[in-house]
Image (cartoon, rainbow, N blue to C red; front, side):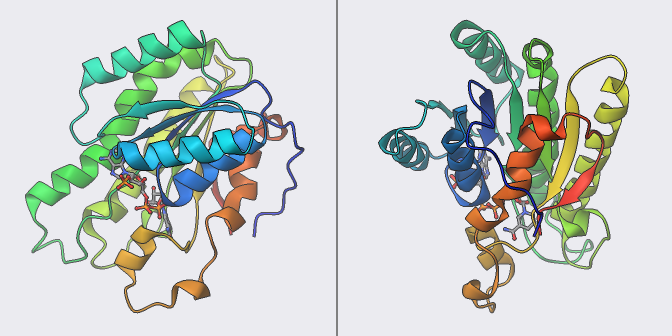
Length: 246
Ligand code: NDP
């Protein structure tokens, strides 16, 4: 497990956007960020799930979050511009983005991969984070500590049979992160890194490994130290890295 103990006020007064915040790792990260002082923008495709996370954060007495229901599969440029305008009016800046939402797609050979599912996976896992990052960049530039965190996977570093579009989208995510980190290195205060969560007890993991005993893998809450580290100032000098949460 990544060894880091976050100070309680690590993210005091920070504005942090989390995609896929309604379930799994995104939900745990949104709650962990709020618990460390951040105002979290909860983005996802299922409003009821986002509302539940919103209620849990409020009930815990953490800063009031914001809700952004958005389907990353169908979202267009104008949706991201609208998001940027809303964030600008409400907060005037953005301190961090956790690109967490992803689709698993199907587990099959490249030869039999359904091209429609291929497009969906690439749209959600790669194109949406690209567009969102590009359009939110001016707001990130206004922060003194901006951190962009992408979510990778072990199959995005070493390819494996039958992982299809998912694995390839994660290779591309690593490339997007490295390109951005290199571009911003000397001209910006924004840092950009990847997290590989490792096997984590979520719906996606259960879909990918139906025969596995869920109790045999870590919970999303247990892998939060790296998520906190990369969002807070203890990682100000870390840029262009792909780190393992476990
Ligand atoms: P889950 O499937 O449990 O959760 C994914 C979240 O993303 C859900 O909240 C889901 O919303 C949201 N989402 C999916 N599609 C869209 C969309 N089109 N628009 C908006 N939101 C969407 O996944 P995990 O929590 O397991 O995974 C989180 C990240 O970690 C992913 O990037 C995944 O690739 C990565 N990862 C996970 C591992 C694991 O073992 N769990 C291992 C390696 C990497 P909704 O709930 O409404 O469907």
